[in-house]
Image (cartoon, rainbow, N blue to C red):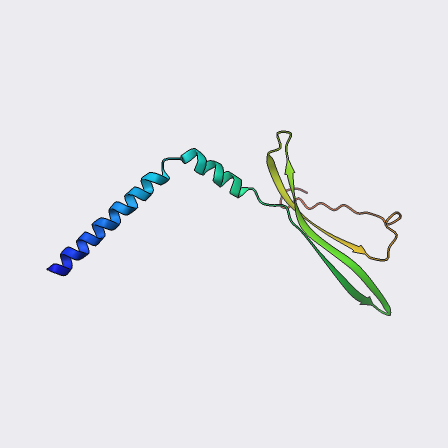
Length: 110
C-alpha cells in the first residue's frame, strides 16, 4: 500500500511540474512564433571542391561548385531557396569561356 501511495504522489508531483512548464511556455506565443519563423529560413551555402579527370590522354583539372541561393523580395523577406551546380575548367580563359544557363522547373513546366 505504501508503494502505491508513493507512486501516486510521484505522478501528481510530475503533473504539477509539467503543468507549470506548459504555463510558462504559453506565456510568450508571439516570441515563440517569431523564433520558429527565423529557424525556418534556410541558410544559403556554397561548397567548392577541386578535381582532376582524364579523358583519353588529356588530364583536365576543374572546380566543382554546388550550393543554394536565397532569393528575397522587395521587403527583404525570403521567398525562395534554389540549388545550383557549376563546373569550371581550371586552365580555361575566363574572359572567353562560354556560359550556359539551364533551368529545370520540374513537373508541369514544359
